[in-house]
Length: 538
Image: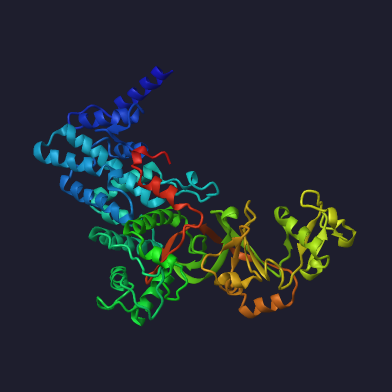
């Protein structure tokens, strides 16, 4: 069977690729790829064989890079992949440079053919990574349901040949890069921290009393001033003065704010650790988050909502511009909020809350301690058909989560655990956005407190922003519906994409924010991203 299959392929080759003097060397490189016998040239793995073969098929199996001068310009574009947080050598850069030099010296047709095929594979693979990322996120995150952007080999081939012919490959690649403003901000930061890294690290700061408060003095203050100046948080002049003065305190507060530490100007263990963070660590943080943006950018619609789980933030975007944001509370480390994409289809005012079985034991325990707990917290007991059950008829002393056949339902009120409004995007994880009576949690720097759902700091303004565009609900309409204390469902005229993301670095045109890797997800992605493409199993 294998012999027959090979014979058919060779016959196809004899028809598709006639041996001509001008392309026989090219044919020698392409034949093993086309029949699946080998996907390597000069020990370089062909990463996108389908696109590479499609390109030569569309080009009549002739060389694509006949214009050697333009080929060298294209090589510079491959080198610039480093600016995107990608590795040029994932696109054969060193090998292509060596082959280009060899062609300059002796112009051997066999070498030209090798260069041609590797260059085609390099550009198509780089383009694919710009569109959808280098790493398949489904291999890293089990809950990932974002559809990867589909790259058609024939369409990719036609696009490449068009840009090579018109010498517009730079524009073609630029158009594939993410348009979310956050992406450009991270790219600029990558250049900044790489330049800092090239200058070398400053010594670590050590404090005499392990803490430094405004108005105090310390021998480490000049080094502190120098570090903050390098990081662009301090704009004053360098000085050997050891006083921790107001100007420097203001710079430390800005630094703390950008790193999600209480911005009180007091340098304790947390702030000191961040001040001594290596530039290379910042670079790694940025690399993984550039990749996370590439995963989703081509799936974005005109209007969408992003929950940044790592940053405890919610962002509402319109036309790729940030329209509004607020703080959120997300799942604890052992009840992680999953990463997935959904569509918000309706909003519920004055919702009820059916307590999940997994946490009903807590309410049973409360009832044993306080028989009036259900009344105080506006709970009723119902059976599996939602019929009311008299709570006084229940043997609470012997009840447990395992033997309790009923459900607890909390009625609409300010005490309701969902607050007075919830935002529904149906999903298999039963995750949604909602209000909460526990407002003090939003004042914490780290806000991973929930059982998985996302609590919103300012849910009524969020409802106003969502409903005002096409559903004609004003803030007063929302307030009136809440005041009525009746459960009301509002279906959105147009579903809103909700992206639950995990960005440990985020920012806009003016500032960059660094967040703690609360779910410890950066390490696995960084390892995969920095592993050479030929050796990567993800």
